[in-house]
Amino acid sequence: MPDPIISFEKVNKWYGNDFHVLRDIDLSVAQGERIVICGPSGSGKSTLIRCVNALEEYQEGRLVVDGIELGDDVKAIDQVRRKVGMVFQQFNLFPHLTVMENLTLSPMWVGKLPKKQAEEKAMQQLERVRIAEQAAKYPLQLSGGQQQRVAIARALCLTPRIMLFDEPTSALDPEMIKEVLDVMIELAEQGMTMLCVTHEMGFAKAVADSVIFMDQGQIVERNKPHDFFNNPQSERSRDFLSKILGH
Figure (tube, one colour):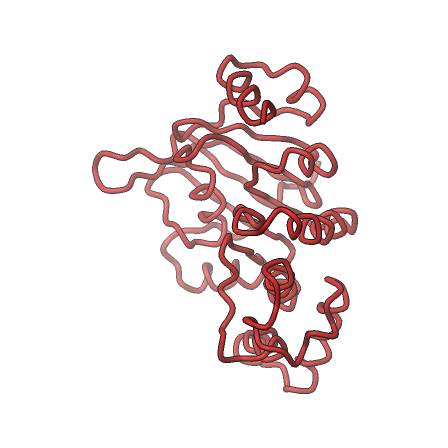
């Protein structure tokens, strides 16, 4: 069996001396696997995925991403960040730059691509997320859903092997959620390795290979979507599902 593309081994993280935010996390993710992570607020979901590209540091354990062990080595962190794209809850686009300029910034500065090549790559990704016609506009001229699709395209411009999504639809109006989820479903169907923190359970049912439920910094359950939704293994999972599916 090939090595997992992401491997957590007994990873622990604290904020300060008291808040134990990740507790003995063991998690393997195969290349091309799509995982949805859910759980109550404060359960450690976002912290978990932010450790994958070293936006958060962990204090104990071992984390290997695409064959590179993450620790204090700045070079290793830089290598991993070139392989991992991330889409945040807020779009984090530069408002004073056009969509095209937002997308070409990293490929030109980090990837050292010539401007023409960076623009060609950016246009390919804008076509991929179906907003190529917005390339010359500024972020504030776009809807929230369009801005989030720009953010996804920007992450894809560095040709990542792994995509992390941290509640990518939670800042959107309901009618804009579908257009972002459709893009994410398309990415999943193309074989992208994905870790997605979300409460969009329809998305989890449609594309996830497995669903992880977290509570109080621990992975309480990992299961196939069908089994997770129809026969959750823990009382805590059942309680969580009854609340979010009951609305």
